[in-house]
Image 1 (cartoon, rainbow, N blue to C red):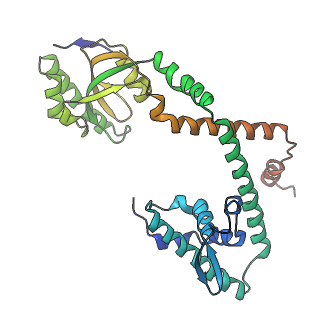
Image 2: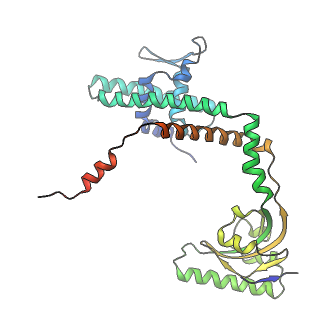
Length: 309
């Protein structure tokens, strides 16, 4: 490629009804390891439904199990939604029992799975916590953040962008290319890149700033984009280049050695990564050491085989 030199809101009630089965499981279980860790004096009763007490620990367990499906982050509103979900579950489970429509074997399977899952989660949480130390955090930070940053430059870019929604739409692709070529001719004739970008670019975020695209590393660009941008020198402008989403004209304003983000700004994320890696390694080791006989593949093969007459 040639270059040239340049002078969310969901309905809580609907969510509650959609998750009745999961809440029923929580009601059957009653408590988990986290609940057991709470003392009787702090585990207050928050409601009584037809004589059945609902404790704060029950709300905590329910939130842990299905709370990720709720948009509300306000603690008071969230607590109220979870409590209503739990109450609905108790009422519905009682009706199901009275009408004798409960599949006890299915319920037991769900209880067994949930108990195993709870034990697994508690174990993995402990393994993750043990793995997170100041030393392990700093080591991961050096490996994942500092070393890559030292070996990768950043480019300060401007760009002009012309969109096509479907790369298989030849007419749209051709139309975007023609607009890019016209913009490139204006720049080549001496017009200011930023002025042309502000006039014709179809990137709504950068258009108002004269195409200013900021500092970008290779991983923050598409492959086609980076392939051209990292061959250019300061002040150079590329000919129009095509990516999967449109036609671009790129200008390199400056280049610098990448400065890694400070550890304290991302300590929590690095700690989470360390914990997750320790958990994955533990599971992989257990799986490798276990004797596991699987029959599903053979059964699938048998079912797919043509029957002999």
